[in-house]
Length: 155
Figure: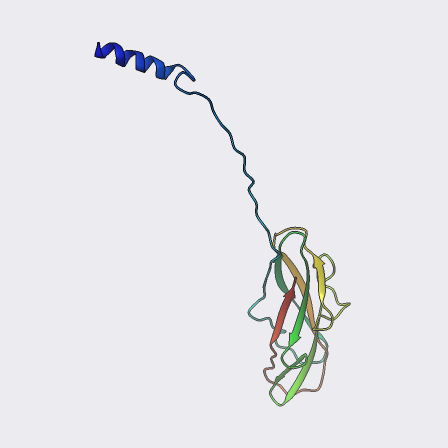
């Protein structure tokens, strides 16, 4: 008798819906909020190298920015010494120029605290911004010169 009851229970378990009286469903919403964010990276330093100051010297550098897709950003540069490298007994003025709209090197618009490089981000992918720095020839003493530049991105 016990085997018959177990066989009936086992058979009932194999029949779909036989032991169930019904079902119920529920729906729910999944939400997320994405905020604008940007990161910036800069080379530890870049150098004009050694030269005799008889002609202008230029060098390119790259700042890399990555922002949330659709975020608009404005990046400024600030010089610790008013865009002048100091050292030896003299001062060596220079200018950093903004890249063009594609991020390529250009020498049209200075890049400083009053001339921001603005661009809408079309992707979270990092974008290299190639800038050009130029030192004009001058009458300065031989020696090492330096300045510190801070890049700030507002988004």
